[in-house]
Image 1: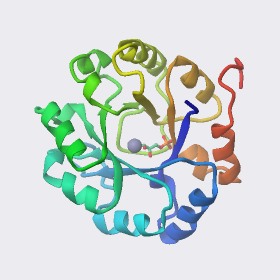
Image 2: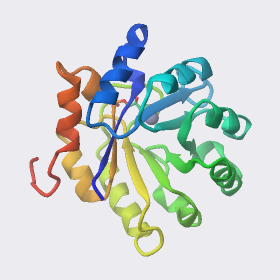
Image 3: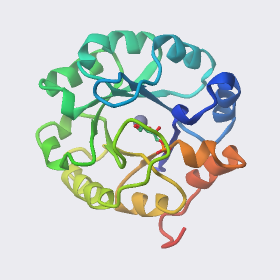
Image 4: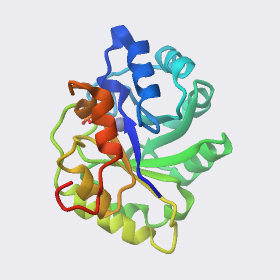
Length: 223
Ligand code: DX5
Ligand code: ZN
């Protein structure tokens, strides 16, 4: 499949959110990546349901919701109501991950598991057939604009290998520090969804930055 691009709304201008949403609507982006932070699981607080609903009202592409919150089970239904198409929960906060994944699927959403940079992909061994997406953190979650962690390449390869023959449609999403310098190599390693915050919103021309990531040829070494 062609890879997908999910600009991270966390890096948008919150005083002009509608403008940025419309920019993403017009662009080559496939999804809106939405970061929900609770100040407990991660050392930052982002935004909640009122903002999410406002985004949903204007967005014409699916909302890819990344929950960086403890006890996400309490809020899954509300996230669905607020417009989530995909819901990813963190492995590190879900003692009953299988149950949580089933609950997300029962809501009719794509079910994702996010893993921190230090969490080995091997912990997904017994859930890999049940999930639609892995959100692989390539920075420590909590903030946009951080530096990409190189160890991610190795993890993507290992995860793609693990999924081979067991979940061929698995979406492997890379979240954090993605830009034109690492995108092609990530796709070659087996990723097929790229989240991009700063590299899109700090660009002079965000539409162009998105199409650059979307149209990258991952077969070319330095593309
Ligand atoms: C970090 C978030 C990311 C972040 C990515 O906790 O999960 O989605 O917004 O932003 P960049 O691309 O700037 O690292
Ligand atoms: Zn994210």
